[in-house]
Length: 172
Image (cartoon, rainbow, N blue to C red):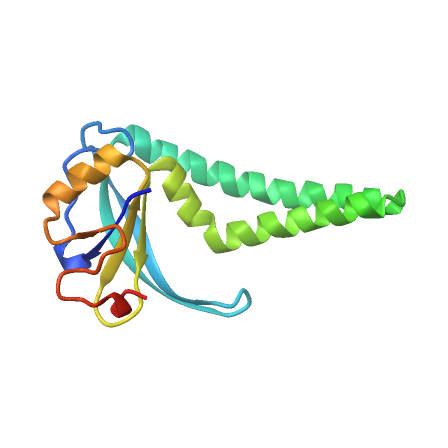
């Protein structure tokens, strides 16, 4: 999973789809965020990063998002009924295991759902690093797209190295 650091003002993408290398036909706003999430209270800042994609990958992104959240909600609701039925039939261990799994799925979708959807459908995620400025960490699923992305972003630092003019302590 290659990663790179770049300032948002210097960010460019190759003119091909990030998911399949097809011709660019649409733009998907990849959201880079930073902030604090305490499950009950959260504060986030968002930055839209225009990612060139083809129509097929944009539709796939929409489908994966709908399927993930619909499936997650159905799993929580149906799993909750099944867990209660197991508990009423005095299968406490099975009910506890299913309840823990429901909690993991619900928290996983709440905390990392959008990032997983972007990764699975488009192959790129963006994280807005804390600190002054708009420094981004982009992760790429496909090595070929990462290499072509580096070709148009000469100022980007590959992997975990610091950006030009930045210290390693500023990245954390």
